[in-house]
Length: 70
Image (cartoon, rainbow, N blue to C red; front, side, top):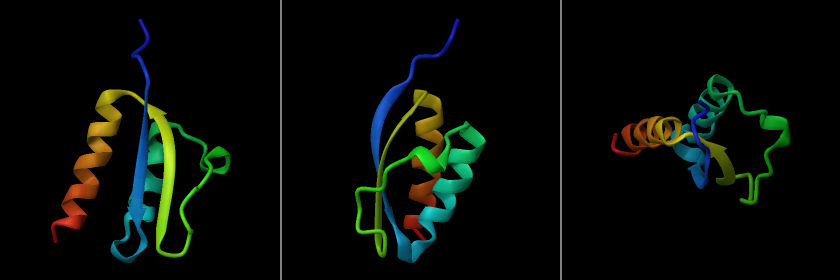
């Protein structure tokens, strides 16, 4: 049985290293960064809509929350 995927918009702030965290997460999750479309400005905000399992998205949210709360 395959885990169901959900879509979620991910907003990343460039000044806290969030794009780097996202890239590592995306590679570990099996997402191809070359196929993702960044609808943010790309200089200070990146915005991606991704499909992943609820567990994968919870992991990403936790990582981003940790860096945002520093």
